Image (cartoon, rainbow, N blue to C red; front, side, top):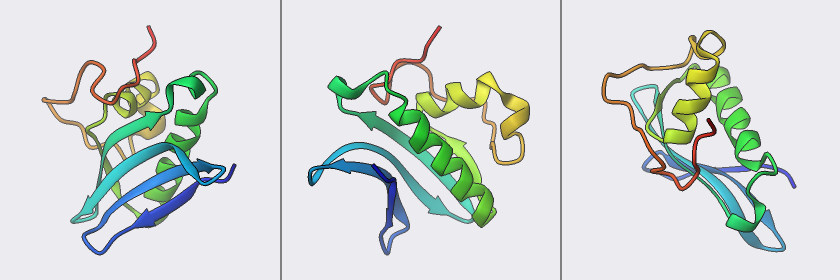
Length: 111
């Protein structure tokens, strides 16, 4: 399965995967003023634990770096990934005092 990307005229977009014509996972974002606000990551429950969210995350990071965007991790999954390796993402991570916590995206942080 190849990760696809779509961005509409309002600069809202998704990295997503489809299987047999059905969307099975997505990482949703909005772009404004060279900031990429990554606000949702979702994977169908029966496919959790297979690294699909991680693949979407890696594509978002690659895209942000390629375009020169900074990332606001409004999604708790993305924030956890950034916090695990802060030095690796320091170039794109926009840190905030009110970063999300909990399972807001439906993906529970490990640990």
